[in-house]
Image (cartoon, rainbow, N blue to C red; front, side, top):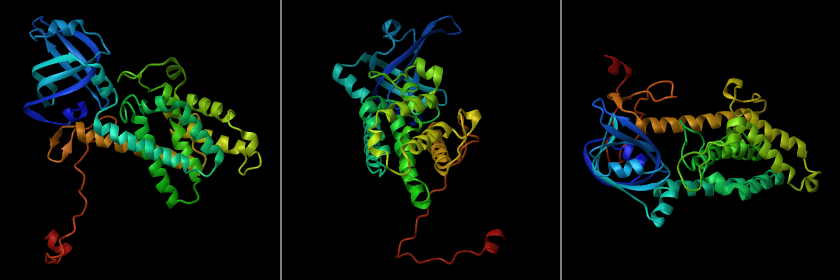
Length: 352
């Protein structure tokens, strides 16, 4: 079982199960009575949780001596309520080398989804007609595939997990492709390339180490941020292309580069959200809303999974969503053919 599956299971009676995770941090605490206890923050590819280890736990001393970044197997009886996850009679051990490799690869469901997303991403980038944008995308993937596939889309709020950027980019490409079929005046090649590169600076802002689930804090990401880093990276990759071979193409090379850089620079949509410029082209406006839509719907999905019901069909508000969620309307289920059709009531019947 993964941590996200455990967190989505609300059970007041103990549930016996095992799961693997990496130790992120240890905090030493004291109860009101002055007894020591530990708070372990643990994580896997799907999420994180905090475990309390009381001083009467059989492995309390071993837990005190543990160091962050170690990988453990946890087994026992677990309950989940509004205060979090609690264990009864649980124990832990370090993973074997083979178990470590399996954990770092992600849980089966997340691994399968990210493999499918990566395949779709490659299909979209190889479908581009503009040879300059197609070569630029391929150059980026060739150089940075490993780092890209272990980077998150954010530190929190949406797709904040190892490999989350691939999920975010692939879904945005699907949306961009669909929107281009509705608005054929949009430059599809530019849209797909813009989606790939809009967050490419996050490879230095939200990436993970090769052997862990704790996002790295890197100097370039802290001092510059992902938008300036993305602009710099695309400029560097662009200069390495055989541009002379394409000097007769239309639109001109420089126009293609400038429009792609504009998508990166403007995709947050507002100055106060970190964009150094505002959207000024149809593709820039479309990319901004596609990015925002995918992020928001991911937050909504997480909100339903993590929030408690405060009343039937109403969930507690989850930051940064603007209001509490309400149970969505299920899709219409058509009646079976052999069932007699009933005459719908008139509006007057409903009201009176």
